[in-house]
Image (tube, rainbow, N blue to C red; front, side):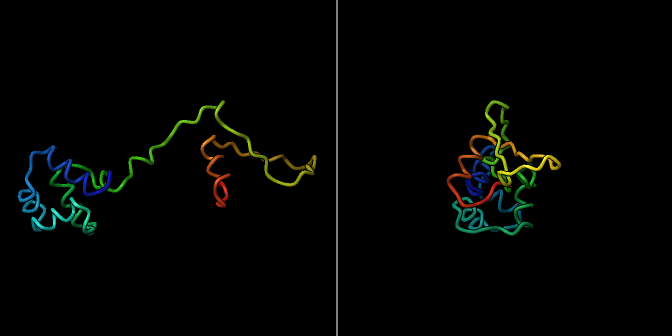
Length: 114
């Protein structure tokens, strides 16, 4: 959900009109409308005032819910061995465990997994 939709949803859940939210946040009704329709981007200071009026933390608007931590079960992990094919008996072998999704992402992009 984008910023504008989150603001509108929370405003409606709190039973506020755009005019009430605007007045309490010290912005114009037009600005709230533009925010809710994703036609403008507020300053952090303005977003903090809107969050305070809506009684939510600022992070509610800043953190993307799609980036939630995910649990990767051991059986779903893949071991990726790094280094040369020659392994010195004096150096430990390095392996990195990655999830199936991370392994697929690695195969589909040129970005190295770190």
